[in-house]
Amino acid sequence: MSKSSAIPVPVFKLYGETGAWPTPDLIHCESIPARSQLHGWEIKPHRHGDLVQLLYVQAGQANLKVEEVINHVDSPALQVVPALSVHTFKFSEDIQGYVLSLAQPLAEQLGSLLNSPVLTTAACYPIGTDRRYLDTLFATLAQEYSQQQAGRDAMLQSLITVLSIWLSRRKQALSLSRAAQLDRGREYLQDFTRALELRFREHLPIDHYAATLGISSAHLNALCRRLSGQSALQMINQRLLLEAKRDLVYTSMTIGQVSDRLGFSDPAYFSRFFKRGTGQSPKQFRVRDPSNTLQPAETYR
Image 1: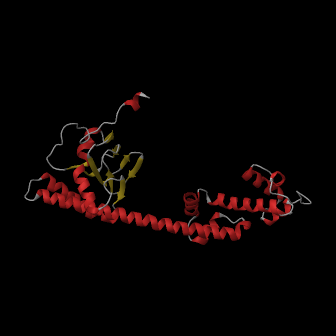
Image 2: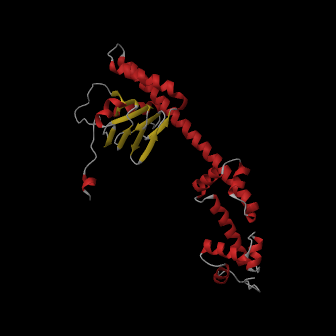
Image 3: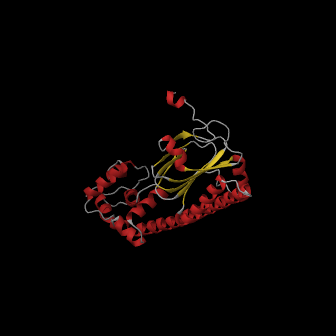
């Protein structure tokens, strides 16, 4: 074990502090600059044993790493850091925003109230059009936290509940959006597969299939990789190889005839394509395939 890996990740109440919780409240609220500027705008790897943190980036840039997931933030976002999660943050010097720390009992109470795991799952939520709403909510939280007015505890509890509901709704909305995108992506892939089945012998470019679907070639490639594990070009080539193998095994066509049937400009090009995809020449594949009982009169033209 290396010397660096033997050093345990520190556990803080608040970053840089090992003493008791600084207030009798179940929450702690401060601006991001208030603590990060004391540490050169970098919060090094650590974790909190019994705290959930909500980091609201209003402006500036931040690299937010929670466990092994890194989010590069350059627009308003809200990062959830569950208890015991190792995290590290790097901020630009013009960073603006808030850090809200919730004691574990309060976080559990909110989770039970909302019947949602939103505070126990690390995630970075884009704010989008809710910027003004979140700005007002956090500013009010910070004001209530810093003052000792009548009904302070009830107000803080209400504001944190509102924030938790916002998080739960945003998590649900993003989940529905991703599910819809996945379903639409599957539809695109199915349409591409059907079009490919009809026209793979024509050696059409990926741009043609993408235009037919109404998406970009980059989008089509990304969908193919995500949903099938292959690029669009790999899918086209695999379909051609499959048909070539079928023709070589189950028909007595010459290799030249197979080449013509699959739309290749000449048999030599077809043979190079086949060997590149299978590691064998068409002739070697035909001879070595144990299922091939056909005896073609000519194996190459």
